[in-house]
Length: 134
Image 1 (cartoon, rainbow, N blue to C red):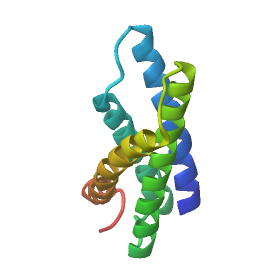
Image 2 (image 1 turned 120 degrees about the vertical axis):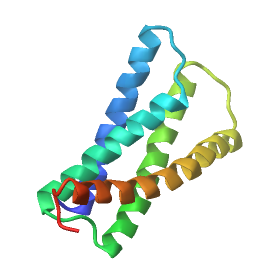
Image 3 (image 1 turned 180 degrees about the vertical axis):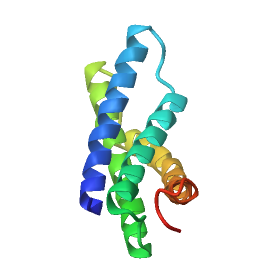
C-alpha cells in the first residue's frame, strides 16, 4: 500500500463515517459534538495506519511519516471544510469566510497535533502486537 493510497482511503473512510455519524445523531435529535468527531478520527486513523502496517509488513519510514502526517492533517482540514460548508448551506446558516476559516483552522490545528501523536502511537501498537518488527 502506498502513502497516496493511505491518504485516499483516509479521505473516503473519514468522510463517510462523519456523514453516517451525523445522520445517526440527527435521526435521534442529538447535536453533533467534538467527541463523536474525535472518535471517528481515531477509528479512521487506526484503520488506515494499521492497514498500511499489515499490508507492507512495516510502518512508515521517517520521510513517509512526515509526508503522511501532513497529508492526514490536510485531508482532515479539507473534510472539515467540506462538511462545515455543506451544513451551513443546507441549513441556510449565515457565515463569513473569516469565521469559517477560523473555526476550521482552529479545529485543524488541534486535530493536527492529535494526528501527529496518534500516528506514532499506532506504530507502537503494531510493534507491541508483533504485527510488524520494531
